[in-house]
Amino acid sequence: MQRATSAFLITSSRISPVRQLGSTLRTALSTPASQSPFALRATNGSSTKTMAMALTATCQFRGYASKKDAKKGGKGAKGGKKGSNSDEDDDDSGSRKGKSSGSSAGADMSFDPVELENKMGQCLERLKKDFMTMRAGTANPAILDPVRVKVDNKIVPLRDLAQISIKDAKTLMVNVSDVELIVTVEKAIREAGLNLNPIADNKAVRVPVPKPTKEFRETLTKQASASTEKAKTIIRKLRQDGMKELKKDLKAGMSEDENFTLEKKAQTLHDKYIKDSEDALKAKTKEIMAN
Image 1 (cartoon, one colour):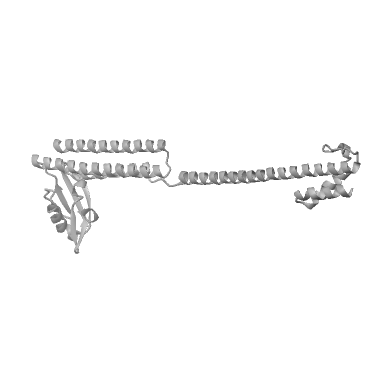
Image 2 (cartoon, rainbow, N blue to C red):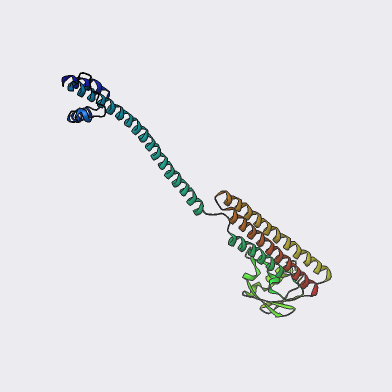
C-alpha cells in the first residue's frame, strides 16, 4: 500500500490541482484492481504490486486526459473568445452600418424639386410683369410702373402716390392723393422716357396712350426679346444649381435611382419654363405688332 501511494504521488506530480489528486487517489483506492482497465498483474501475483501498477496507469491516463482536455479547453476558450470578439465585431459592425445607413437616410438633402419649380415660376411671372409695362397701343396701368416721382428729396414710385385707372381703351387716369403734387407727377411721367404726353386735369392727370409707330413697335419687340433671354438665362442657371445639389446628395447617400429621377424632374421643369417664356414672348410680340 505504501509503495502504491508513493508511485501515485510521483506520477501525479504531472497533475497540477492538489484536490484533483486526492479525488483521483480515493477513486483509485476504492476501485478493485481487477476492474481497472490498466491493471497489469505482476508475474508473482502480488496484489499490492498490481494495485500500484493500476494506480500508476490510472493516474497517468487521467493526467494525460486532464492536460489534453485543458489544452482543448484552452483552444476552445480561445476560439470562444475569438468567436465572442467576432460576434461583438459583427454587432459593432452592424451597429455602425445601421448608424451610417440611418444618418444617410435621415440626412437633409440639398435638392428640393418644389423649391426649384417655385423659383422658375417666379422668374416667369417677373417676365410677364415686364411685358405688361411695355405699351402696345392700349391703355394699361402697368405702363406707368417705371415712373418715379421726386418728393421731398426722395424718389418714390408713382403707384405709392396715386391711383391709376383706365378711362378708356386709349386713356389712363392718374388720381393723385396730394393735389400739390399734380404738376410734379405730370412732369415725372413726361420725362420717364415712355413717349407719353400727360395732361393735368383738375385733381388728376390724364395720360393718352398714342398708337405706337413702326419704329417704336420694333423697339418694344427687341425689349421683350431681351427680357425673355434674361429670364431663360436665370432658368438655366437654376437647373445647373439643381444638378450640382443632386451630385452632392448622391455623395451624401441618395440612391442612384432617386438621383436619376430627380435629374429628369429638374430637366423637365427647365424645359417647361423655357417653353413658357418663349410662348409669352410670342404672345407679346403679336400684341405689339397688332396695335
